[in-house]
Structures are given as structure tokens and as C-alpha cells.
Length: 411
Ligand code: SAH
Ligand code: SF4
Image (cartoon, rainbow, N blue to C red):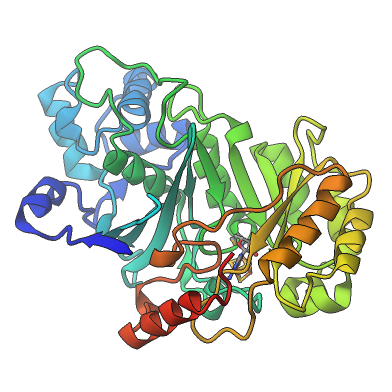
């Protein structure tokens, strides 16, 4: 069942209205401290001698308190607040749609204002609540240049890269909606709670290939993990790549987050078909890059994602080849039951086959590897994301529901 509510009703519009971005003003979200200071001085809003203090203040309001309006920064003078408001924005994207799955998964369709001569773009962000933790799945691009044959996003052309601001505001807007900025309006409470956060983990596993948008993803993740701000531990941030080998080392060196690799096949012939970037960076190079990932240890393993496709990559021989391929790499293996989408020719492996595959992997020393599909009823599961420009038509949605009821791809 899909619970969806219209957030454009009058009441919600008025409460969100002030936060919808105006394209003309520069956003202060997603800038490094240095860039933030430069922007303030350039606009003539803050004199040089105050920059450090103002940057610190703003950083706190933006990333600890999560305010979305300068008017709420009550320890900053009224004059400065209005000067800031004249030149800059800290608005969130517009929320076009918010859906809540029967399993509690939420999916937002966010709209960002145009950049330069471009058009507004829309992307999806997914929140997955679990026992004791909550994970936000963030998008890095609108569409994707890669064309993995089993991925719905891969059928949507790349529109553009997201900026650091747009990557971060997915997290900040999700926290708004989940009530995960509890100290926003309290006069002195300003602590980032270590426990009990709704969003405890983030994964760069939404739309797009994050390593084809390296600089913006890096900026956003360094801010998300900044100890004086959003304070997410780098161990709780996972970046998933289809295998952009030249950027893998830098990811560890410069961002320092956990790495996930979309492996899906153990030989080049099959991987060329499933994940075509393999033709450019074959398995040998990919595995070599993983072996030298900075910080790799038994406590900081690489996650290898493996989508279970019926009669394609799900035999016991494939499981054996997988274990052999990863030998010696501190690894976790994540088996992902294939999530169907309209127009795909793939089917999800039978549950029995997945279990046999998982048993083999478990016996080889890898723990609990099957990823439970979440939010399938609202097309929020892995590889099902696709944005407004190509949203499902009603008959496609019905066809998909029929597929799932018929048991295809149902785990
Ligand atoms: N572009 C990056 C990150 C986004 S995809 C990447 O490819 O790693 C997140 C994960 O979902 C990837 O492992 C991807 O291969 C997988 N995926 C894509 N389509 C899927 C589908 N239909 N069913 C299950 N998993 C899918
Ligand atoms: Fe792009 Fe990842 Fe989908 Fe491949 S799996 S098409 S890299 S989003």
C-alpha cells in the first residue's frame, strides 16, 4: 500500500513556503568554511575582522540547529540577518511529493531551482528506518551516464551533476521532515545527540554515480561528517560506486568514508553486460584498487553489492567465484534481490536460490548478506529511482504492481 499525501495543501504550503529556494540568490549551504567567509566578505555583509566568528556562528545555525531561515538566527543582529537575507539563501528544495511505504520507508521527490540557463531538476531521496538506526539514501546526479542493464536509473539520461548544496539539502530536508533537528528552536540546547537520531547513517546509493561528481560529493560529505556540524561519523557514511577505478583511492584519502562496490558479476564477460563501465575498468583493476583502499582493515571492510538476477549470476559456481575473487580483501557481501521495474527483462532469483547462494557465502565467512528489499511499493528500493521527467505513468505502475503480486522479483 502506498500512503501519499499532498504537501501542496494550503496549510503545508504556508509552512514550507518561506523555505522554497529563490534561484537568484547564492546558497550558503555546501560551502567550505573558507568559501563561506569569502562569500560574506565579497557581498560586503561582514568585515574581514569578523569573518571567523561569523562563519562559526553561521555554521552552527546551519548544521547543528538546522534553521532554514536567517530570521531564526536570534543571536545575530537584525540588521545583519536582513543583509544576509538580501544576498543569500539557506532555503531547502521544494518538496514535490512525500510518500510513505507500508514498511515505514519514505521517499521524497525534491525539486531544485535552475542553475544558470538550465531548468529546475527533480531527484529522489529515500529514508529507511530500521531497528536502532535509520539510513538516508542520497542521490548524487540527476540521471546517470552509465547504463547498467538492470538499473532503472540507468535508463534515464544524465541531466546534470548535483551541487554540494543539493546533496546536503537532501539530508537537511529529510531531517526537517523527520523532526531530526530537535534543537532548532530551543534557546540554548545545541548539542548534536550521539544516540537516538532518526538519520544515523547515509549511503550515496541513490540516483547517479557519485565518483563522476567527485568534487561536489566530497564537499558535501566532508560537511556532513564535520564534528562541529552535522557530525555523522565517516564510518556511518557509505559511498557506492559502479567501479570508477581512478577515483577510488582518492575517495579513501580525501573523503575517508566507507566504500561499497557494485560488483554483480565475477567475470569480465558478464560484468561487461551488467555494468558496462567494466569495459573501461575491468575486474582486475577494480579488485586491485579495492586492495589498496586507504584505511581498509577488518574493522573497516569494503561492501560488495551483488544483485541476484535469475539464471544470470545466481548459480553456486557464481558464489564460489565470488568468494575466490574477493579472497584476502576485508569484505562484506551484500546480496540484493533484484527489484523489478517496468520494461526490464530481468527477474529476481528464486528465494531458495538466494538462500543457497547466501549459505555458501556465509560458510566462507561472510555474515548476513541478504539486503531486505524496502519500500518496493513506492518504488523506493535500490535501482528503482527515477525522477519526474520520466515518472511512471499510471498503467506502468499497475503493470509493476501486477509483476510483484505475481511473485516476480518478490523475495
Ligand atoms: N551508481 C552507484 C550508486 C547507486 S546504485 C552504483 O552503481 O554503485 C545503488 C545500488 O543498487 C548499486 O549496487 C546498484 O547496482 C544497485 N541496483 C541498481 N538497480 C537495481 C535493481 N533494479 N535491483 C536491485 N539493485 C539495483
Ligand atoms: Fe548508474 Fe549506479 Fe544505476 Fe549503474 S547502477 S546505471 S552506475 S545509478
